[in-house]
Amino acid sequence: MASNEESLLQVLSQYVSRQAAENLVRRALAQRRPTSPGEWARLLEETLWPELRRLLPFREMPPELKALAREWREQASFPIAEAEAPEAEEEELPLEAVDLEDPRARQQLARRLARLEGVTGVVVAGNGGKEELFSGEPVPLDLAYPLLRRQGYGIFYALLEREIVALRPLAQGYIGLLARKEANIGRLLHALRRLISLAEVSG
Image (cartoon, rainbow, N blue to C red; front, side, top):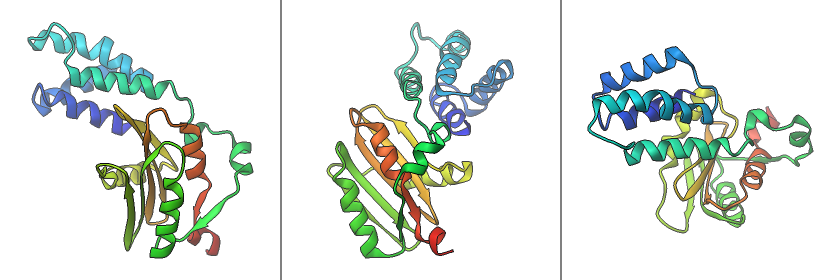
């Protein structure tokens, strides 16, 4: 949940100093430590905001804080996540080994994933290069990948204001999907979960 804490600190730092934001969050986390997106939303709305309101000239929660709370509540409405996926379901998926270091393989995989319903962008990145396909403005998914790798996620998704982002770290690279918000998140996660690194098969 370190990424949630950092997101909260970044938004709070728009209104108070970074040190003040860290102190606020530290005091709130000492009372209760959220373990889900829904609990982070409640921490923000019920614990942090009343205290922050005494410091700021706002009657209502600022838009950026509202948006963060809404994003967490929307994430909480989707119970599908890597850690919660039934083992039997994962075993039934036909696995596909992919070579992220082969430019041709990256290109073919990106084109195939781009045809999934609702997908508006694909990134297939290896250690030596990447293939990007976006129907609109590219999204810098590279920024999220190191964080996911450090936290050990096998697959990750987030709900943005209008879109879904799903990422799967693989070998020394990753595969990322950007999709319309109404896209079937379960189908996107299944498409990513079935991909494995060629190194895992050969090694």
